[in-house]
Amino acid sequence: MSDTIFLGGADANGTGHPDAAQSLILKVANRHGIVAGATGTGKTVTLQVMAQAFSDAGVPVFAADVKGDLSGICMPGSETHKAHANLTARAQQIGMDELKYVGAPTVFWDVFGETGHPIRATISEMGPLLLSRLMGLTDVQEGVLNIAFQYADDNGLLLLDLKDLRKLLVSLGDDTLRTEISRKYGNVAPASLSAVQRELLVLERDGAERFFGEPALELADLMRTTLDGRGYVNILDARKLINSPKLYSTFLLWLLSELFEELPEIGDPDKPRLVFFFDEAHLLFSDAPPALLQKIEQVVRLIRSKGVGVYFVTQNPRDLPESVIAQLGNRLQHALRAYTPTEQKAVKSAASSFRPNPAFKTEAAITEMGVGEALVSTLEAKGAPTMVQKTLIRPPSSRLGPATDPERAEVQKVSPVFGKYDKTIDRESAYEILSKREEIAAKEAEKLAKLEAKEKEAAAKAKAKGKAPARSRRMTTTERAANNAASTASREITRYILRGIFGTRKR
Picture: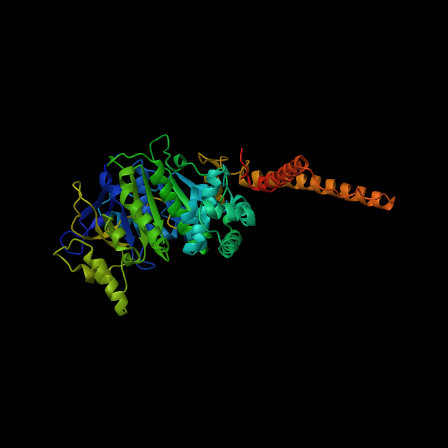
């Protein structure tokens, strides 16, 4: 296997003939990158070419498929396929000896479990910060959610799925428990608690209930290689998921943060352990609160040392914060349109991010490129960016366009994780524990109610028989003390029963 991946042929001399190969060195591929360009300029094909090239080099890949076109990577291309017309000529033009058609080893995933293996996370793994972003909570409401998570941690309540979180929030609405929690953790206002519950309902209606639960995704399943050493290409079918932009971006951010948390530091390996393609990357940063933006920037900056390369795919580089753009060493810029003053500023900004090439004007080249052409600048072995080159992106070896449903089904049957995630597991967690406590408390309350009813019935019978009530007399000191003790014991028993619902009684 080579230590580089071939991207295409570059016009090194400005003559219009692409005669210089443009490659990405695997040793610096974990220093992130960006694939940008207007709609219809060839970003998805570039993503497909890069994903299969990484796979051939033994690097596992995870990529979101927003339009469904990327699914064709699992099938070999063909000269008879209409989308592959003239690809052989292009291969010869950029110096490829022969264009071999072959598919990449692929695993299909789907948050909703319809067109791929189900992919899940637990509520605890997602955490209050990402959940708050997902539900669009205010700072005050996010504080309430943080308190709920802390209370669950302190009391051994596992939060695995949405019904666990819903049950916990209902429990926190009890006046007695809310007062106690407010003294220990901070104020929990009923209005804020109700707002969180309403947003949780919206989240359920958007289909998030199928994402939260077990078995949760094991990251090792995204980092598999085949027996012949090729990396699996993990395709997330996001055609339906993209209709819930916050769920889409929050899920991918969660996945990125899990990789950051679980993988050990390895510095700069000879090739990445995993390459992560984030399509529609602007959704990650839209309406993100400052605290979340800081987390994203931190993960992008530091995950490189875990051997993970992150490649953002978006229409305009300006969709990403400057602090993130600064971390992206490998850049592929497809054409941008510049019809308005705003678009012209975007073109100028994109051009300024490249190391200039004296053979042409970068700003002009960005607006003049055709479909399948890109300005490419990658990192040299020592980490310095190469001079920007006009590049004709190489044709893919796999199919251009989507795989059919029967083809996807066949690929899924031979998947290395077939059957592992298909059935949901519902083990004992917060919902079951709190429900049992409520049931026990209800039975105790029922016993007390029956006891009181019997006492009232006995008193009524005694009155009906005409028995005179015992003459009142002053209690002695001993009797008064005994009576006070009995009253105190009664109150403690009642408190024990009521607080037992929420697991807050002393052990």
